Image (tube, rainbow, N blue to C red; front, side, top):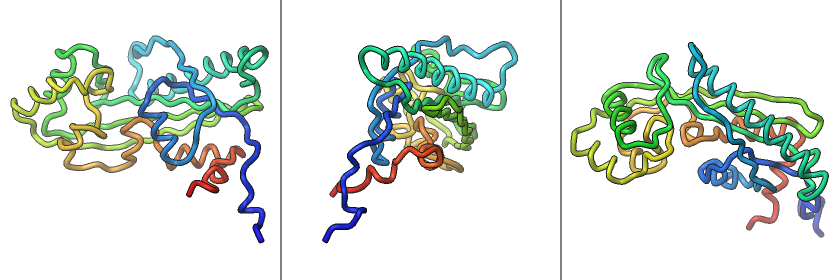
Length: 219
């Protein structure tokens, strides 16, 4: 006889992911959470004058969540029924000391980042903001320390040729080829990729989103 735990989840609140990042979507799916809608926010992500790395990550995650929540509410009135949804956003900032590294779009930017990161430690801040259906905001900031090996000219040239750095904070993707560069990581690996899974699941579950129930009947 099947008990309540065997019953399928027939209803759950909607979840909006305020991101176009395939990495963040894949990370959410890894823990069994499937957003109902992707609503990336088009923001100027340049740091403000004198803004510290951790403050930048928090500000951008907050702004992305608020913009997406407004878009979802408008759409919910007519098309997507996203009104009253949970809205999740994140932002990742890579820094050396107080120096914020760019999300590289040019090979020259990526080369400068790799030269700076070579043989030294850096920090990765990922901020997560969750807006609940009632409009409450919950925030977490996760700090991870990463150290790279000393990179040879050949390694840097090969990595730049791969193009994997494009659009990545600090000019690298640790889940890809650059995983071979990291000799030490203290903190959240998934946070460096773009979404700290432990903290994200805690936030969702703590606000009543039935994340763990979505694990049922996955076999």
